[in-house]
Length: 187
Image 1 (cartoon, helix red, strand yellow):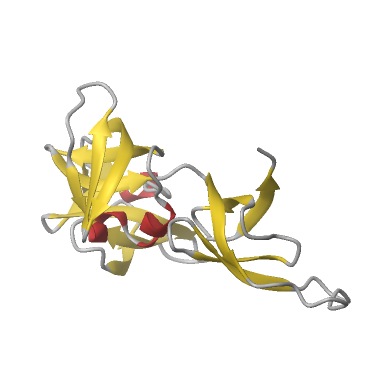
Image 2: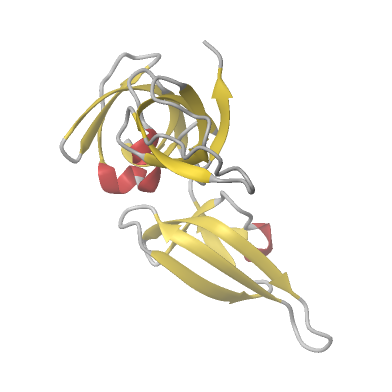
């Protein structure tokens, strides 16, 4: 058991036989009365997000998680196949477990897989990935008064807003948490 004051962003805990990962944490101490801890957490099995308020001194069940470095192999429908870098096992993980960042997975990318009692719960992608631009609109000449952007499609099928100078065939770095363009990569 851990005190709710120890909950921080990224901590995983068990509540009502469900596993949750803290997405946001706020500690509120009013002038009178006891402190409250308000969290926003994602259910690791269903993907649902909840907001919960705890009183100071409450406790939740902590969990022991295993972490493995795995390499993304390929996707087949809603199943994503990875290879464990140490045991060479190839676990298949549902798209719902990975969530929105799945659109930035490309062959060969190393990620951190979180397991609870051999059940895959979460996949942590690197902060940035380099992706090839496969489709880009032509920039409009003279449209440079402000920071104009355009949509491009990268090799994984994701759409990313980029500056006008990015062209088809360029490699760009994309932030996997926000989906934002970071920079153009020289190769």
